[in-house]
Amino acid sequence: MNQQIGIIGFRKDAVLAAKAMGLDVILWSNKPLPKNLPDNIVASHTEPFPEFNENLSQACIDFFNSYPNLACYLALTEASVPATALLEQHYKHQDNLKKLYICHDKYAMKIHAKEANIPVTRFTLCNEIKDIKTTLNEWQLPLYAKPRGSSGSRDIRKIHDMQMFSLVKSADFILEENINGTEFSIEFFIYNKEIIFFNITQYYVPLEINIIPGPSNLVNIASIKHLMGKLVNAFDLNNTIVHMECFKTDLQILLGEFAIRPPGGYLMKAMELAYGFNLWQALIQIKLGQSPNIGIMPSHHTASWVIHPNKKGTITKIDGIEAIRQLKSTHAIYFKQHVNDFIEKRKGTGEDIGHIIFVAKNYHSLIDDVESARQLLKIEIQ
Image 1 (tube, rainbow, N blue to C red):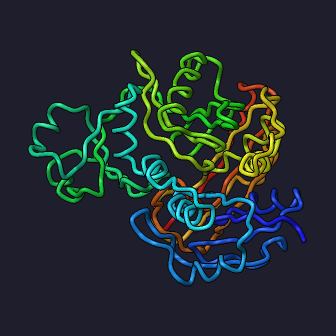
Image 2: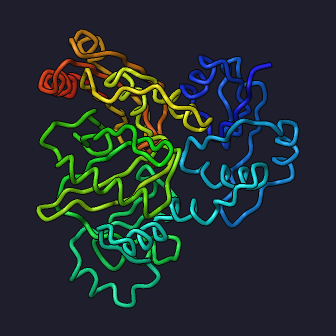
């Protein structure tokens, strides 16, 4: 019988990575599962994930009671972080709820970071603002109202005036000031309290196109290492992957937010192609207490283009795919929706109608092909 691990939040590449390692998967998904699942999923449970202030349902406990010896639990989405923490508390007797809550809730995260002298973007709870008119006059506009427990730009509201603010005046939203600077992200592994791998991702077209790794002049490496070290110590992070979003201003690097789960936007695949190792397998090895097989230096530059027209309606045209396929850097093209399909307006970066992965030996060749593809792709919605 193969060793079994618990995966919380379905991501097919992670399940396939476990299969390649000879591991069986016990899966908890908060969404209906697709057909033709990998055959190493030996059992699955579908139920909405609880929050930190909730309990595991009896149905969930009954399901996992049948698999009491899981080697580890992996949270693969932001929504699954509380559920995974509750499972670890119930079955592994690991009481990490408070620590993981601070890493999940944007307001608690920023308060804790500020207390640890980590520079953060200006913020407050929406319901704590007494005079929004003064805030609108004093803060850099637009302001951004973000749900405290979500990620991937989901349900973020731009605030320009008092009327817009009235829609989010709640303790469930955190208000942040606009930053005049360059936004980017850092993905890194921690194993035995050491940062063993990190990557800097350029937000080439925010919410759409990411470049891995970003150009060498994007940010000072020493500053990044210092910030990662402070974050690890302040939040007592260990044996995990971290996805951290930052801003580079003229004065300093600011922490936007971070998550202790794998990034979305197909970045895991893009990093694999750039660095030459399977990051899903490395994450599983870390969770199993094994020293992971990693590559530190990239051999290629890659780009991930997450495609969504951000409109509600019926797709009437998708042109340019074959021409994009002929570009030297194009590695893979995949579309979930096609002509005559109806799509909703995009709610977050986790939603797309398709994606394209590019791979090139050098940064400038990659950018040339990415720009060509942007000119070639034509999508029309009615």
